[in-house]
Length: 225
Image (cartoon, rainbow, N blue to C red; front, side, top):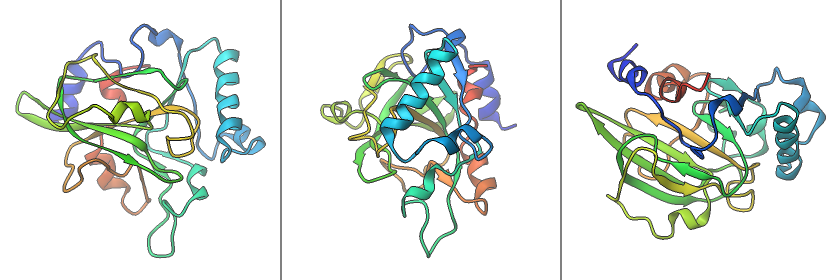
């Protein structure tokens, strides 16, 4: 385990969506190919998938569904963004998803500054996205917040400061978030290279080792369950 990952283990009380919801109201949601329930619905239809998530939450008396790190999914075969003739199939998710209603407050995981933001438009993409840069105890890393509302990036500026737990954005709906049921894609990035307002959230099996090392499990920081 790296120095940064050990550092994450020492941090407490980190939330990235609505701080009023206790972790006792979070429930895991598996979207891997092993979830046979997904074969019964059209996951490419955001309205049907949102109804599936809402029913899942209601059935389990939960408010937030979470999961997805290092998860192989069929969800991405809907678009050439993840599959084309020139590249290996990208179908392994390397962030954490938190499924909850559009409009939910999105919070800064830790103190940081705005490193980049953009509307990453297109089917299957992030939609409005914000990346924060963190410098803590000589450790530099980044957190990515994807599938936000358009309003979230209207008045934001590069270099703006956010404190841990401060509202950064709100979640977008399927009309702006890449065509997904509303959720936050939260990802930790060590070396962002020349990326500015975007970073791969899904990788191929060929590149998995690199991305797992460069993008640690967000639950090391969030400690949900």
